[in-house]
Image (tube, rainbow, N blue to C red; front, side, top):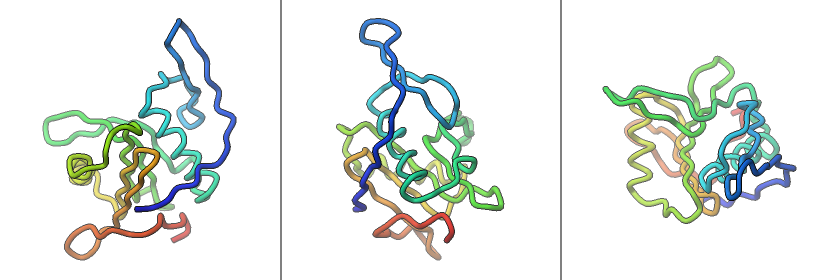
Length: 147
């Protein structure tokens, strides 16, 4: 498990209707519904940008992908400096346990978009894996972007 220390960030949050909050996504440049999963995603993005120093222009947020005949959406995809998919991050709400179902979801997404690193997080818990010769192996920390 990787311990993530989230940086402070002045999120822009607004309430459009009673009980319906929206957060401004700086990468997508739009307001999105503030769900428990979105809160984790936004915090993890700030961790990547501020702590790990990943370039914002190399991070894609919630984009469609084709998995066989089914359309799916990944949470976060980081590209390397040659614009190749490098790291995929699957975010879950904080109350969702990171069990084998979540890991299998990320592994299935890796079939459609192969990456060197897979990350699953629910905000409180984070697990990361690096592609080895035969399989993904657990790692103790996220790589710096320069690696």
